[in-house]
Length: 502
Image 1 (cartoon, helix red, strand yellow):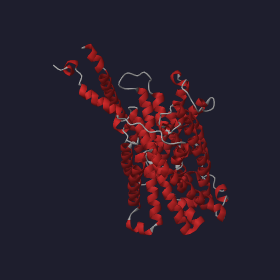
Image 2: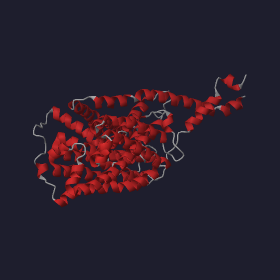
Image 3: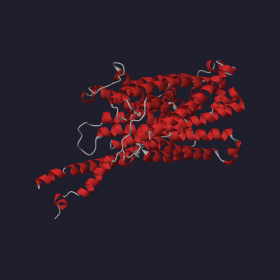
Image 4: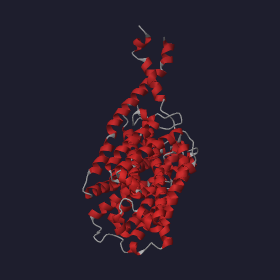
C-alpha cells in the first residue's frame, strides 16, 4: 500500500491546495502620495448626485451640512491616517477593520472577530461600488440633455448603459498594468475634474449672476421644525452627505501600493481633504445663489447644466459639461479601484472566496474589477441616482462606524497598542473616534432608513440590507474554504518530517 494511503492524506490534493493558497497575488508598491491624490481627486464630484436632493429637504441649509460633513471627514480621517501607518499593508478602511478585529491566536474554523472586520469591509465595498452606476446614469442624463441627435436615437437609460459598458471596460484595460497606469489617467482627468467645476462654479461671481439673497432668504423650508421627525431626516441627510464629503478617505485604501505609506498616506489624505472642504461648500452655495431653490427644483438631477448655461451661454456650457463628463470618468475610476481593492483585501483575509484574491502579473485584481463592472450594469436599471445612493449610504455608515470602533480597539487592546505608528492622531482621539462611531451607528443608520421611508419607498433600504446580508453566507463559505486550504498547506509542510520518520 502506498505511503499516501497509509497516512490517510491525499498529498497530491494537498499540494494543489497549498499552491492555490500561494496564488493570492500581492499588490505592488508603485505610487507616491501625489499619484494617490491624483486618483482620489475626483471625490469632489461626489456632490453632484445630491445637490438637488439635499436642497429639496434643507433648502440653503444644505451648504452648512456639506461644511459639517467635510469637518466630520477630518475628525474620522485623523484616526484612519494613524491606522494606515500602523497597518501599512492594509487596504484602507477594509484592511484596518479586518486587521484589528481578527483574533491573534485563533485556531478554529470560524473566527468571529473576522466576521466583524469582514462585514465592515463588505459594507465599504458596497459603499464605493455603486458610484460606477450613479455616474454612468448622470452621464446618460447629460448626454441626453445636451445632444438632441442622441436623444432622438437612444433613451436616457440606453445612453447610461452604453456609457457604463464603455467606461467600465476601458478602465479595466487602462488599469490592467497596475495602479501607476491608473494614476497617469488620474493626472490627465484631474485637470478635467477641477477645471470645469471651477469654471462653472466661479463664473457666476464674475458675471453677476450670483445673488446672496437666494441663500439668506431660504435658509430652511417654511414648515421646518426641530422635532423628532425632522431631526431623523437631518440624520439621514448626514448619512448621505458623508458618502460624498467624507469619501476622501479613499486615498488611504492604496496603503499596500504606496512606496512609503508612513508619509505618503497622510499627505495624500489631507491634501484631498483640503480640496474637498472648499469644493463641497462652494458648489452648493453657488448653485443655490444662482438658481435659487425653485431653480434647483426644476433640475434636481443635473443642476450644473442650467448653472453653466446661465454663466457661460449655450456654447460655453456645452464645452464645460463635456469636460465635466470626462471628469466623471475619474470618480468612476476612483470608486472602481477602491471597490476592487476592498474585494482583494477581504479575499486575502479569508472573508471572501479566494478567487477574488488573485491578481494578474501586474498586481491588478482583474477578476474583482470584472465582477464589479457587471454588478453596476445591473444597478443602472434602478434609474435614479438618489435611490442607489440611499442604499449605498447604509453600507458607508456601517463601514465608518465599525472602522472607528476598530481605532478605539487598536488604542486600547494591549496586543495592538504597542504597534509602531509613524503618524499619530492627537492625544485622546479614541474618544473622538468613539463619538463619531456612535454618530454613524446607530444614529445615521436609523436616519437614512427613516429618510427612505419618508420618500414613500422601502426599495433602497431593502436593496441595502439584502446586499449587506449576502455577506454572511459568503463569509461562512470563505472561512471553510480558507480553513481547508490551511490544513492542506500544513499537511504538505509535514512531508519532510514524515520522510525522516520512515
